[in-house]
Amino acid sequence: MTHSSSNARSSILPMCIIALLFFIFGFVTWLNGALIPFLQVVCQLSETQALMIASCFYFAYVVMALPMAMILERVGYQSSMVVGLSIIALGLLGFIPAALLQEFWIFLVAQFVIGSGLTILQTAANPYVVNVGPTQSAAARIAIMGLLNKGAGILAPLLFTAWVLGGFSDINLAAVNQLPAEQQQVQIESMAHQLIAPYIGMAIALLVLAGGLSCISLPDLALLELESTDNLAQDKPASRQMKRTIWQFPQLVLGAIALFFYVGVEVIAGDTIGLYGASIGVANATTLTSYTMGFMVLGYLLGLVCIPRFISQANALRVSALAGLAITTVLLLSSNEARLIATVLWGWSGIATVPDSVALIALLGLANAMVWPTLWPLALADLGRFTPKGSAILIMGIAGGALMPIIYGELAQASNSQQAYWILLPGYFVIAFYAFYGHTLRSWR
Image (cartoon, rainbow, N blue to C red; front, side):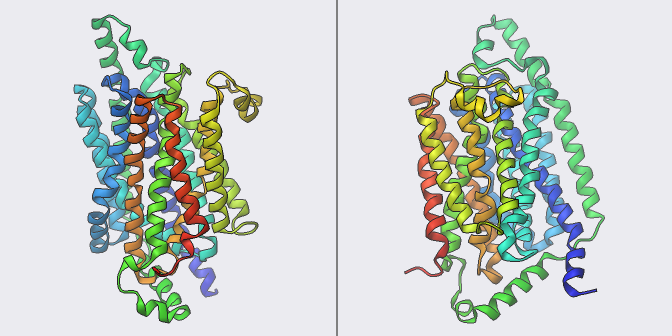
C-alpha cells in the first residue's frame, strides 16, 4: 500500500466526523433565520431588536475566538470538539427558561453560549479541511462540507416551522398585536412553550454525539500542519525565515477583513429574508431562509464541478463578488409586486412564487456560496506554522455577522426594508478587492 493511499484511507473517519460537524454548524446557525421572526412576535421586538438574535450569536466569535484557540492548543482538536458540542448543548438548554419567562435577554445569553461552542468547532474544523489534501483543491473539499452545512440550513427553517410553529406558521407581529390583550398573551405563551421540547431534543442529541466522539480516536491534526509547514519551508525558505508574527501576512489580514464583510452579507441574505417577507405580507415567512440556502447548495454543487477543473479558486471568488454586486443592484431596483424573476427561478416546480425582491434576496445565496470555500485557502496560503493562529484570526472575521445585520435593521427602520439592502454593496466591493488583488500580497509595501 502506498503512502498516499494509506493517508487517504486514514483521513476518511476524521473527514466524516468533520462533515457531521459542518452539518451541525449549518443547522444551529441557520435556525436563526426562522428564530428571528418568531422571537419578534414572542418578545414583541422591533426589527433592529429582533436582529440582535443573529448579532449576539456572531458576536461570540469575536469575544471567544482567541480563548477557544487557547483551549484548542491545550487539549487538542478532538477534545476541543467534545467541549464545543457540550457548550452548544448548554446554550440550547438555555432556551427553556427563556421560553418559560419570555425574557429576551435570556434568549440572547443562550445565543451567545451557542456561538461560543461553535467558535471552537469552527476553529478546529476549517484548517483541517484546508490541510488534509492539495491546496489547489481545498475549495472543493470545503464545498463538500458546505453542501452539508447549507443542506442543514434548508432543513432547519422547515423543521422549525413544523416542530415549533405548528398552527402558528402564518402569525406575524402585526397580526398578534391586533388581538385583544388577553388573547394576545395566551397566543404568545403558547408559541413560546412550543420551543421547549425541540430544544431539549437537540441538546440531548449533541450530548450523545459529544460522548461518542470522546470514545473514538482521531489522527492528530498537528501532524497535517507540520507537513504543511515542512512543505512550505522547502518551497519558500527565505520568506518563511522573515516572518515573525501573524500580522506580517497581508493575505491573511485582508482575508479576515473580507471574511468580516462576507459573513455580514451572508447573514443578511439568510436571516433577514424572513423578516422582509413578513413585512410585505409573504405567507410562511419563517421558511424563506430555505430559499436562500437552496441557492447556496446549488452554488456549492457548481463549485464542486468547476474547481479547480474549469476555474481557479481566485477566479471563482471574483465571479462571486461581481455576482453579488449585480444581484444587489437589481434587488434595490426591483418591485414588491412583480413576480417575473421568482417565476423564472422556481415557478415551474409548482412552488408558490414570491415577489421579485424576495427572489433576489434568495438568489444572493448563489453568489455567496463559493466565497467561504475559496477565501479560506487563499487567506491561509503560505502561513505554515502560523496556520492555527491564522485560522483563529479568520474565525474572528465572522463578527461581520454580528454588526452588519444591526446596521441593516437601523437602515430598514430609517427608510424601508428593501432599500436597506444597499449595505450589501460595500461588502461585495471589499470581497472583490480581495479577490482581484488582496490575496496576491505576501508583504506590506
